[in-house]
Image (cartoon, rainbow, N blue to C red; front, side, top):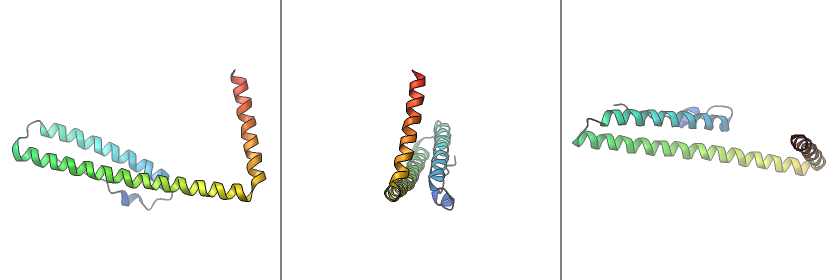
Length: 117
């Protein structure tokens, strides 16, 4: 039985942290599911010390997965915060452009909703 772990730091050099975090989360989830399936297959014949070692490996893997998810969620939250700050700055610097864009989006939504009814 082999339990693997992904290193979230290996993907930290990518250009888009949000996309990297979501793909890292997907890889982590698939890896975790595969590890769980392997563990279930391997533990059907285990007893005593072997079973305790398998449980310890499972607990380590769960802790690693939790840590990885927490790191990725921090990246996503930071990215969202930076996006909100840039939007706020833009709206304060270009209020008429923001009003025009909002009006255009409102008209488009109104048109689409009116056609749907």
